[in-house]
Length: 196
Image (cartoon, rainbow, N blue to C red; front, side, top):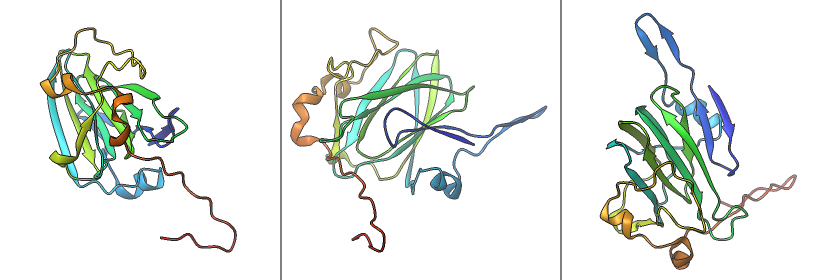
């Protein structure tokens, strides 16, 4: 397994080992000990599966108080998967990273809590699995409009197929009181213990 840091701290690209023979393929899509060692803490408590047609764009979603880390992979088809840092006070606030995930490349993207997530389908159909570190909470669900000009994601679709909810989300600048707060990790001093 290869884990690569992206331009957003904490957002990781995972390329699992794929074993291929005349029967087909085998791979582990998650292994708690190996993923934790690679910087993906978990635990994952909910798995979601979406099936979408070409041009569907889902996002940009996040939960405010029950923030979800997500491990995303395309089981079939191809998607352009995006993470946006929306943590108030973060040095990378408003920046995004996007990667292609597909049933062929078998890559995964880990998106930590505090980031908005979205993807669009660039194949005829796509089945997308995402493992979440917290449960879905209807009252806690928030979102940013997909085409926010200040975030400026170059989606590979001009007129996406959107849900009514995704079409009505506000811009990032309008969500000031509804955003997670950036909390930098404190470095330990020699001989001291961190408060818990």
